[in-house]
Structure formats: C-alpha cells, structure tokens
Amino acid sequence: MVDDYLQRFERTGRALGLGPVSVVEVEDRKNLGMAAEGELIARALPSGAALVTLDERGRVMSSPDFARLLAGFRDAGREVAFVIGGADGIDPGLRARAEASVSFGAMVWPHMLVRVMLAEQLYRAAGILAGTPYHRA
Image 1 (tube, rainbow, N blue to C red):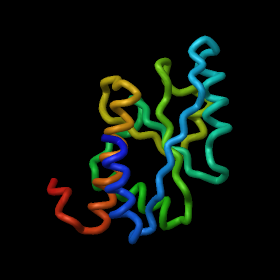
Image 2 (spheres, rainbow, N blue to C red; image 1 turned 30 degrees about the vertical axis):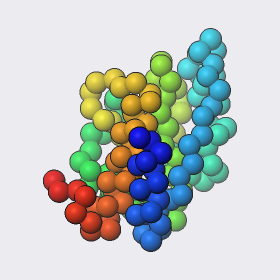
Image 3 (tube, helix red, strand yellow; image 1 turned 60 degrees about the vertical axis):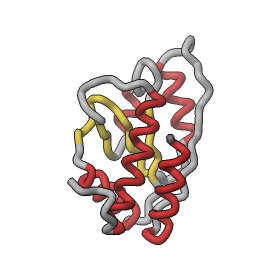
C-alpha cells in the first residue's frame, strides 16, 4: 500500500513541485534505546530539510491543513523529512528540533501502519493542492 500511494503522490505531486519521496530506514537498535535511535535518525536527515515528526503528542490536523503545511514547506523551497519513531517513540531531543509534529490521533499506531497512513495523506494532500476530486471532505 505504501508503494501504491507514494507512486500516486509522485504522479500527482510532480506538476505541483512535490516529491519525489524516498523512504530511509535506520538500523533497528532496540537494545541501545531511544537516544541512540534518535542520533541515527538525525544523521539520516537531509541537510536543511524541515523535520516533521509523526507523534501522538503532535497536532491533529485535517487533510486540508496537512496539505497547507506541505505546500508551505514547498513554497519556502524546503525539503521535508517525516520521522516515525520506533517502539519507544521519538527521542525528546529530536522531537524538540521538529518544525512541526503531526498526530494521527491519540491512539498509538504501529510503525508500518503509520507509514501507510502518511503515504495516503501525502497523496491526498497532492490531490487537494491540485484541486482533484479525491478529497471530498
């Protein structure tokens, strides 16, 4: 599902100056803890990218609000790096560096499900910005 939504996003978003998307995995270091994982994630972030965390403590947004957030970074010429934390969450130091934090609700979601939800919302945001009928709410 992730690949399908990201392909759709790239097709729709290309004309809007959005994309391409790359998915970067950091080594799973369960034994080292949240701080070590946070450091690995920080090193994987593209230089100058706007950091957006996906975190249950983040802002619950409507899809149009999310589209405006994405458009704002695009309009500022910024690449965006979305970070989904591991089983223990996102390191507080990394979370503090984020320019935005988005929540998909108060519930905690499995990492891979959040990835699908993010990919779908990226595609939905591109559709909203393009004025397509995909988003009807």
